[in-house]
Amino acid sequence: MSENLSQKAYWHIHDKLTTGTLKPGFRLSNRAVAREVGISFTPVREALNRLVSEGLLEYREGLGVFVPQASRREIEELYEVREMLECAVVVRACGRLPGATLGEMRHLQDQMQIIVDLVDGTGRIAEHGERFRELDSAFHLTLIRGTGNRQLLETVTDLRKKCAIKSGGESGMAALIGHVFQTEPIESVQRTCRDHDHLLELLKDSSGEEEAGLLMGRHIRNGRQLALAAMERTYMSVTRRVTQPSYSATETSDA
Image 1 (tube, rainbow, N blue to C red):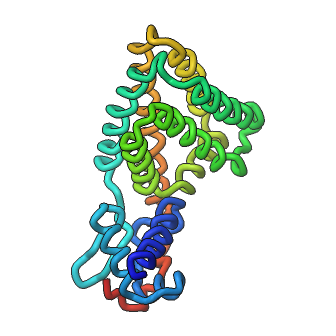
Image 2 (cartoon, one colour; image 1 turned 30 degrees about the horizontal axis):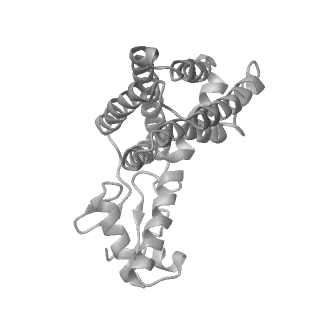
């Protein structure tokens, strides 16, 4: 039972990290988390310890557990691993993916293109940024899933979650996409769609292996730049206000 409650607390906190509800520098209180989830302190402590061991939270001696502030180097390293893995995947996947996988990827890409076409020329993407990011993530994970390698899917999924969390959460990435549409040339998001279109063509047969690998590498490096910008934007927002923890700092953390 304790293990199930610990899992419940783990995913509750993990989801808040992934969505960006918990911002860098915020301190988590065992008491507040336990009250919010409706469980005792012990499984919350276990969940926090697990998240600390995974590098998603940080324990500071005498102070408690905090949402860490990622460095540029951490973001770069995560995307470097993604690039190595996903480039290798597309090279091997050319001419080997099931038709159903290619069809699903095409559907996801078409949905992304609809969003771009909808806002092109208007710059209004605030209500579409999160959806665009979700579709982009689904496109990449569908490709990985199509290889049939469950360990690879688990690894890449974990990397993508860490990239999102370290960049300020999904809300941070979605806000950045909105910012790109609103204040910058739409070219960066149009490029994402063009890359997806081109990749789908290359994946249809094995002759596109080399070009597909190069394309994916460039595509992920572009994503890395967006992630770094999202991280900096999130941290700038945090430092402009007095930091207040999502879980009351007045309550002692006994993790």
